[in-house]
Length: 121
Image (cartoon, rainbow, N blue to C red):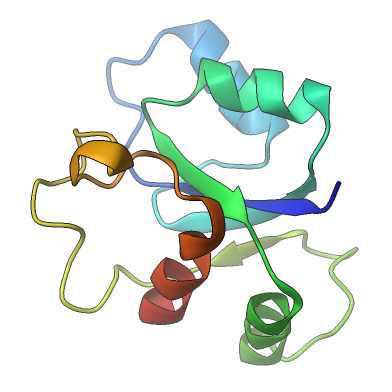
C-alpha cells in the first residue's frame, strides 16, 4: 500500500460537526489544501465519511517531489499539508458537486490525482 493525496474541494459551511471533525483529523481545514496520508483501512474510512467534500487518489513519487520542491523543503514532518492554488482552467466541466466518474471534481481519481495537483501548483 502506498500513499494517498487528499485535496479538499468544497468548503465547510453548513457541514455537520462530525464531518468537520474528520476533516480536522485529516488536517484539512481550508479549500485547496492537500495532505499526503498512508493508504490503510482507517484512512479509507475517514475518506468515505468526507467523500462529498474532497477528491483523492494514489500519488506517485514524481508528484510528491514536485509538491516538496514547490514548498522548498523535503521534510514533510514539520507541515504535513500543502496549500495549493485553484486549478488552472478550472475544475472539470460539470463542477465541484458531481463525482469524478460522472465528469465532476469529487471522489476517487486514482492515478489522475497527479494531473490535478500539477494544475494547482
